[in-house]
Amino acid sequence: MNENENNFESLRRLLALKRHEIPPPGYFNDFSRQVMSRIRAGETAESWEAAGASWLLKFLQVFEAKPAFVGAFACSLCLLLLLGIVYAERPDGMAKTGLLASVTQPSVSLADATSSVFSPSSVQTGLMVSTNPVLSLAPDASLFGQQSPLAQPVSVNFSLPGN
Amino acid sequence: MIMAEPAARQDLESPAPVDEEVLVRQARRGDLTAYDELVRRYQERIYATIYHMTSNHEDANDLAQESFIKAFQALKSFKGGSSFYTWLYRIAVNKTINFLKQRKNRTHMSLNDLDFNAEHDPDLVALISDKTPRREAGLTELQEKLNAAMLKLSEPHRLVVVLHDVQGLSHDEIARIMDCNIGTVRSRLFYARQQLQGYLSDYLRPT
Figure 1 (cartoon, one colour):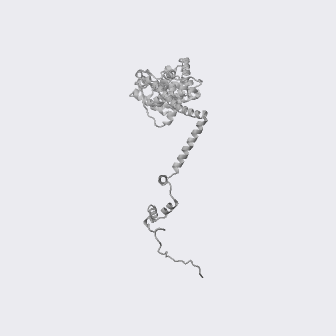
Figure 2: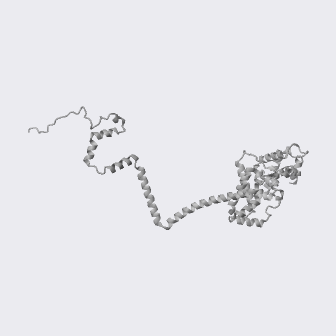
Figure 3: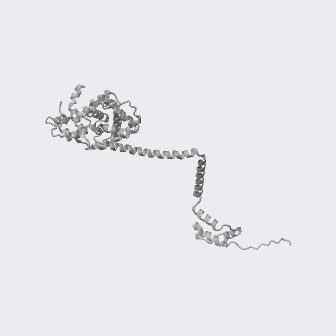
């Protein structure tokens, strides 16, 4: 090994040059401060995370101590869920018009309802608001508003033969 | 100032071992003042080792800081089987090797300046004297060629050269840091020196 050491003596002298490479002046004066500030910053972040976790733990501990809170909390959650479902399933138009109609016309008699439904004006109105393009282009071709040309009045005699 | 002066060749575990033990114990309890003292004690040697491995000041700065931070975070797992310094060194070396593997083929040298003493170092003066094959070579050129040649070595071979020929650690200490046996350290050192001699033959005096 000594022979090897001698063979590499020149190289070792050259490698000594690396010991003379130095960082910028004053570099090490600030080094430990930077390390310590990074460590403190990391600890602060960890403590914030820990604080978040402890808040959750306290919240859960309240539930453990008082079962009434659990019931109340669960009921309010269920109520919120139901309201959400009802509100989500109701269409916007239906929600508005249906609600308005029921508020403005609280009681409608059967006769009024029948007449309004089968009156030509209401049918006309209904056709006009229809989204069917064929029907809307031919508003007179309705079942109730116009008589068919093939339909003829026929007189019927209900008297019994032999009377 | 000379980094990692051969004075570091003295046993690394000898300087005030009791104090170090106390400091480590206090730091384990979260005493940042004690850990600050440990950082100040080893910052130059840790930085120098990483710098000689990377040949880049900015990378060495980042890696050295991260090594100290990781050591603080892992201090609770430090069982005291080896000295704190050896343990810290191992963290820094592993971090550096991982970094170099990721940075593969993207080497960028950012070399530090040479100190004033370099021009008066008799060994270096001899290298750039009339007997040197490349007489025109200045110290800065030598520095660049040397670092470029070092970067051509594989990480384990470079590490052995840095720890032994630059930092002045013993084979035994290097074996503990690299977690291998002394024979491996010796064979790596021999191979690495051979490689370097080939790369730098123009700048070396014939023996």
